[in-house]
Image 1 (cartoon, rainbow, N blue to C red):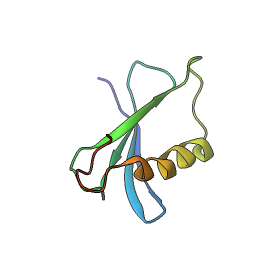
Image 2 (image 1 turned 90 degrees about the vertical axis):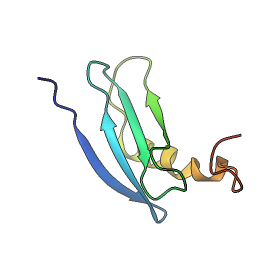
Image 3 (image 1 turned 45 degrees about the vertical axis):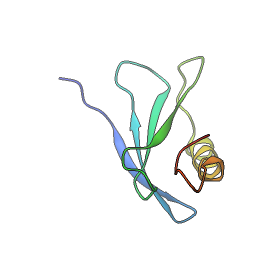
Length: 76
């Protein structure tokens, strides 16, 4: 049985679910829970398989909404 570590985080008023991707060290999926489109988000992976720090995760999360097209709710 594979267990996926996940946790919730709030960044700049937005709610996110962070999940470690099973079987892929240093890879994380970020689901934008409070975003305009259910199930939308992004992924990050390190090239060396080392865990991403919480500070780096928060910086990446904070920059994501600014890249979203306000008309579509998606990246252009």
